[in-house]
Image: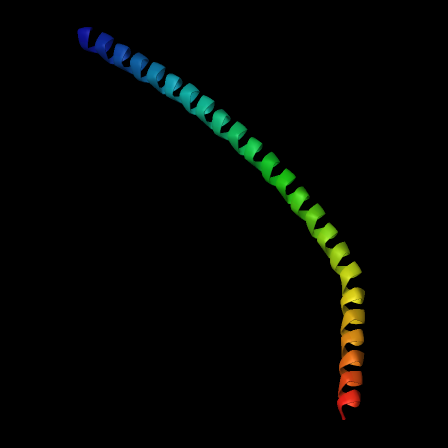
Length: 87
């Protein structure tokens, strides 16, 4: 009888410890999940900012490219004039 009671107490304690560990694990995973959600939101916002800046940069480069081409043409024409004036 004493052995049976000891086994039942041991089984009860193991069940209680197991339940407490499950609860602790559940809480810990929920905490990690909240941290990951926060990080994902921050990364998403950062990606949106980078995309916006990239579009702005592309627009600026599109505006500058014709201007650079014109400057090169003017410099080339002036260099031709200088060579013709020297020759």
